[in-house]
Image 1 (cartoon, helix red, strand yellow):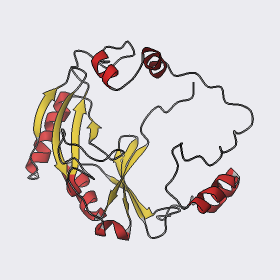
Image 2: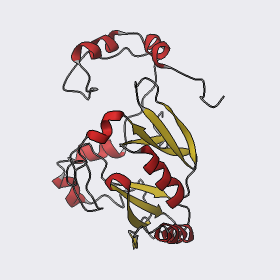
Image 3: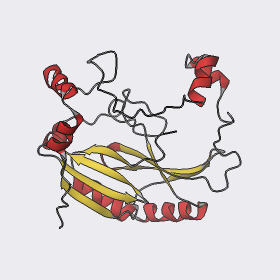
Length: 229
Protein backbone atom coordinates (compact mmCIF):
# COMPACT_ATOMS: atom_id res chain seq x y z
CA UNK A 1 0.00 0.00 0.00
CA UNK A 2 1.32 3.45 -0.89
CA UNK A 3 1.77 5.58 2.23
CA UNK A 4 4.37 7.98 3.64
CA UNK A 5 7.23 6.02 5.21
CA UNK A 6 9.40 8.74 6.78
CA UNK A 7 9.67 12.47 7.33
CA UNK A 8 11.55 13.85 4.31
CA UNK A 9 11.96 17.30 5.88
CA UNK A 10 10.11 19.68 8.13
CA UNK A 11 10.36 23.39 7.24
CA UNK A 12 10.28 26.00 10.01
CA UNK A 13 9.78 29.72 9.40
CA UNK A 14 12.60 31.95 10.63
CA UNK A 15 13.40 35.63 10.79
CA UNK A 16 17.13 34.90 11.28
CA UNK A 17 18.25 31.88 9.28
CA UNK A 18 21.91 32.34 10.27
CA UNK A 19 20.99 32.05 13.97
CA UNK A 20 19.10 28.81 13.32
CA UNK A 21 21.93 27.37 11.21
CA UNK A 22 24.46 28.30 13.90
CA UNK A 23 22.39 26.62 16.63
CA UNK A 24 21.62 23.41 14.78
CA UNK A 25 25.24 23.13 13.60
CA UNK A 26 27.16 24.13 16.74
CA UNK A 27 24.78 23.01 19.48
CA UNK A 28 23.43 19.83 17.84
CA UNK A 29 26.25 18.97 15.40
CA UNK A 30 24.03 18.85 12.30
CA UNK A 31 25.65 19.69 8.95
CA UNK A 32 24.38 22.46 6.67
CA UNK A 33 23.73 20.72 3.34
CA UNK A 34 21.69 23.31 1.42
CA UNK A 35 21.13 27.07 1.44
CA UNK A 36 19.59 28.56 -1.68
CA UNK A 37 16.82 30.75 -3.13
CA UNK A 38 13.61 28.82 -2.43
CA UNK A 39 11.97 27.50 -5.59
CA UNK A 40 8.67 29.15 -6.45
CA UNK A 41 8.82 31.63 -3.56
CA UNK A 42 10.19 35.03 -4.56
CA UNK A 43 12.63 36.52 -2.05
CA UNK A 44 12.70 33.39 0.15
CA UNK A 45 15.75 31.44 1.29
CA UNK A 46 15.66 27.70 2.05
CA UNK A 47 18.23 26.10 4.35
CA UNK A 48 18.58 22.38 5.13
CA UNK A 49 20.37 20.79 8.10
CA UNK A 50 21.13 17.08 7.62
CA UNK A 51 19.19 14.68 9.85
CA UNK A 52 20.37 11.21 8.83
CA UNK A 53 18.74 10.68 5.43
CA UNK A 54 16.21 13.45 6.13
CA UNK A 55 16.51 17.13 7.06
CA UNK A 56 15.33 19.94 9.29
CA UNK A 57 14.76 22.92 7.00
CA UNK A 58 14.28 26.64 7.56
CA UNK A 59 12.47 29.17 5.39
CA UNK A 60 13.34 32.87 5.53
CA UNK A 61 11.21 35.56 3.93
CA UNK A 62 11.97 39.25 4.54
CA UNK A 63 8.59 39.79 6.21
CA UNK A 64 9.20 37.01 8.75
CA UNK A 65 11.32 39.25 10.97
CA UNK A 66 8.46 41.74 11.25
CA UNK A 67 5.86 39.17 12.36
CA UNK A 68 5.14 38.71 16.07
CA UNK A 69 6.54 35.60 17.74
CA UNK A 70 4.18 35.13 20.67
CA UNK A 71 4.33 32.49 23.40
CA UNK A 72 0.95 30.81 23.77
CA UNK A 73 -0.05 31.72 20.22
CA UNK A 74 2.62 31.05 17.60
CA UNK A 75 4.75 28.94 19.96
CA UNK A 76 4.01 27.03 23.20
CA UNK A 77 7.32 28.01 24.83
CA UNK A 78 7.74 24.64 26.59
CA UNK A 79 6.70 21.02 26.17
CA UNK A 80 3.41 21.34 28.05
CA UNK A 81 2.39 24.70 26.55
CA UNK A 82 -0.37 25.43 24.07
CA UNK A 83 -0.29 27.24 20.73
CA UNK A 84 -2.71 27.98 17.90
CA UNK A 85 -4.15 24.99 16.00
CA UNK A 86 -1.90 23.91 13.14
CA UNK A 87 1.28 25.34 14.68
CA UNK A 88 4.30 23.26 15.74
CA UNK A 89 4.00 22.23 19.40
CA UNK A 90 7.46 20.68 19.60
CA UNK A 91 10.05 18.98 17.40
CA UNK A 92 11.65 15.71 18.53
CA UNK A 93 14.88 14.48 16.91
CA UNK A 94 15.90 10.81 17.11
CA UNK A 95 19.13 9.21 18.28
CA UNK A 96 19.77 5.46 18.32
CA UNK A 97 20.95 4.90 21.89
CA UNK A 98 20.61 6.33 25.38
CA UNK A 99 24.36 6.91 25.32
CA UNK A 100 23.92 9.10 22.23
CA UNK A 101 21.11 11.01 23.96
CA UNK A 102 23.21 11.66 27.07
CA UNK A 103 26.20 12.67 24.94
CA UNK A 104 24.00 15.24 23.19
CA UNK A 105 22.71 16.42 26.55
CA UNK A 106 26.31 17.17 27.50
CA UNK A 107 27.04 18.87 24.17
CA UNK A 108 23.96 21.10 24.41
CA UNK A 109 24.72 22.09 28.01
CA UNK A 110 28.34 22.79 27.07
CA UNK A 111 26.99 25.48 24.73
CA UNK A 112 25.16 27.16 27.61
CA UNK A 113 21.69 25.80 26.78
CA UNK A 114 19.74 24.20 29.70
CA UNK A 115 18.49 20.64 29.14
CA UNK A 116 15.77 18.90 31.18
CA UNK A 117 15.65 15.12 31.55
CA UNK A 118 16.00 12.40 30.64
CA UNK A 119 12.35 11.47 31.03
CA UNK A 120 11.24 7.90 30.31
CA UNK A 121 7.91 7.51 28.49
CA UNK A 122 7.70 3.74 28.10
CA UNK A 123 8.02 3.80 24.32
CA UNK A 124 10.99 6.23 24.34
CA UNK A 125 13.26 8.32 26.55
CA UNK A 126 13.72 12.04 25.93
CA UNK A 127 15.56 15.20 26.90
CA UNK A 128 14.08 18.68 26.39
CA UNK A 129 15.51 22.12 25.61
CA UNK A 130 14.72 25.38 23.82
CA UNK A 131 15.98 26.61 20.47
CA UNK A 132 16.18 30.02 18.79
CA UNK A 133 12.98 31.96 18.12
CA UNK A 134 11.11 30.09 20.88
CA UNK A 135 11.40 26.60 19.38
CA UNK A 136 10.64 23.77 21.81
CA UNK A 137 13.00 20.87 21.04
CA UNK A 138 13.45 17.28 22.17
CA UNK A 139 15.96 14.48 21.63
CA UNK A 140 14.42 11.00 21.85
CA UNK A 141 15.56 7.40 21.65
CA UNK A 142 13.64 4.12 21.49
CA UNK A 143 16.63 2.36 23.05
CA UNK A 144 15.59 0.52 26.21
CA UNK A 145 11.88 1.12 25.68
CA UNK A 146 9.84 -1.31 27.79
CA UNK A 147 6.66 -0.82 25.71
CA UNK A 148 7.52 0.26 22.13
CA UNK A 149 4.88 1.80 19.87
CA UNK A 150 3.06 -0.97 18.01
CA UNK A 151 0.00 -1.72 15.89
CA UNK A 152 -1.73 -3.62 18.69
CA UNK A 153 -3.24 -0.63 20.49
CA UNK A 154 -0.83 -0.72 23.43
CA UNK A 155 -0.63 3.08 23.54
CA UNK A 156 -4.25 3.87 22.61
CA UNK A 157 -6.03 5.14 25.73
CA UNK A 158 -9.77 4.55 25.43
CA UNK A 159 -10.52 7.50 27.72
CA UNK A 160 -8.68 9.87 25.37
CA UNK A 161 -10.33 8.22 22.36
CA UNK A 162 -13.74 9.02 23.86
CA UNK A 163 -12.78 12.59 24.79
CA UNK A 164 -11.57 13.17 21.21
CA UNK A 165 -15.00 12.15 19.91
CA UNK A 166 -13.70 9.08 18.09
CA UNK A 167 -16.19 6.23 17.71
CA UNK A 168 -15.28 2.55 17.74
CA UNK A 169 -15.79 2.36 13.97
CA UNK A 170 -13.64 5.44 13.40
CA UNK A 171 -10.90 4.08 15.65
CA UNK A 172 -10.84 0.86 13.65
CA UNK A 173 -10.59 2.87 10.42
CA UNK A 174 -7.78 5.07 11.76
CA UNK A 175 -5.81 2.06 12.92
CA UNK A 176 -6.33 0.20 9.64
CA UNK A 177 -6.54 2.72 6.78
CA UNK A 178 -8.20 1.46 3.63
CA UNK A 179 -5.86 0.20 0.93
CA UNK A 180 -5.66 2.28 -2.24
CA UNK A 181 -4.90 0.93 -5.67
CA UNK A 182 -3.61 3.73 -7.89
CA UNK A 183 -5.39 3.84 -11.26
CA UNK A 184 -3.53 3.75 -14.56
CA UNK A 185 -4.54 7.36 -15.28
CA UNK A 186 -3.85 10.31 -12.97
CA UNK A 187 -6.76 11.41 -10.80
CA UNK A 188 -7.83 14.95 -11.79
CA UNK A 189 -7.76 17.82 -9.32
CA UNK A 190 -10.92 18.03 -7.20
CA UNK A 191 -13.15 21.07 -7.54
CA UNK A 192 -12.59 24.15 -5.39
CA UNK A 193 -14.24 23.35 -2.05
CA UNK A 194 -13.65 25.46 1.07
CA UNK A 195 -14.79 22.56 3.28
CA UNK A 196 -11.54 20.81 2.32
CA UNK A 197 -7.99 21.89 3.25
CA UNK A 198 -6.87 24.52 0.73
CA UNK A 199 -3.82 26.75 0.31
CA UNK A 200 -4.46 30.24 1.70
CA UNK A 201 -4.14 31.92 -1.70
CA UNK A 202 -6.44 34.40 -3.46
CA UNK A 203 -9.40 32.42 -4.78
CA UNK A 204 -8.79 33.45 -8.39
CA UNK A 205 -5.18 32.28 -8.23
CA UNK A 206 -6.09 29.02 -6.54
CA UNK A 207 -8.87 28.33 -9.04
CA UNK A 208 -6.40 28.84 -11.89
CA UNK A 209 -3.90 26.48 -10.26
CA UNK A 210 -6.56 23.82 -9.79
CA UNK A 211 -7.52 24.05 -13.44
CA UNK A 212 -3.94 23.91 -14.73
CA UNK A 213 -2.57 20.51 -15.80
CA UNK A 214 0.08 19.01 -13.53
CA UNK A 215 2.64 19.34 -16.32
CA UNK A 216 2.16 23.12 -16.40
CA UNK A 217 2.81 23.46 -12.66
CA UNK A 218 5.86 21.19 -12.94
CA UNK A 219 7.27 23.22 -15.84
CA UNK A 220 6.62 26.59 -14.21
CA UNK A 221 8.13 25.92 -10.78
CA UNK A 222 10.76 23.17 -11.12
CA UNK A 223 14.44 24.12 -10.82
CA UNK A 224 16.86 21.18 -10.77
CA UNK A 225 20.25 22.92 -11.13
CA UNK A 226 22.15 23.09 -7.80
CA UNK A 227 23.61 26.55 -7.06
CA UNK A 228 26.97 25.03 -6.13
CA UNK A 229 27.56 23.48 -9.55
